[in-house]
Image (cartoon, rainbow, N blue to C red; front, side, top):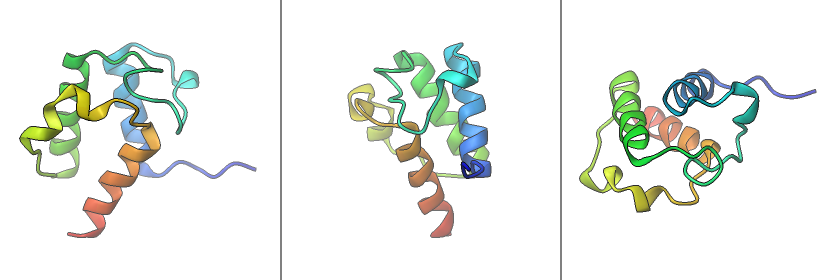
Length: 88
């Protein structure tokens, strides 16, 4: 039995699929944004801006640097968003 994805996870995966033109079945929690899902720098910035607007988060200039996201997985992004939401 697999756990249901959180609302944050489901919304993030939907957005990744839309921006990266990847099928939902390909996106897993351990999928890396750049390396596995082939998000380019524009799609990555759009994803960051979407998350900031969707979840009312602050975006730092460093967040917009592509190299900062190398090796980052979907689950790491979900955890970061959920941590920021919990701290509000």
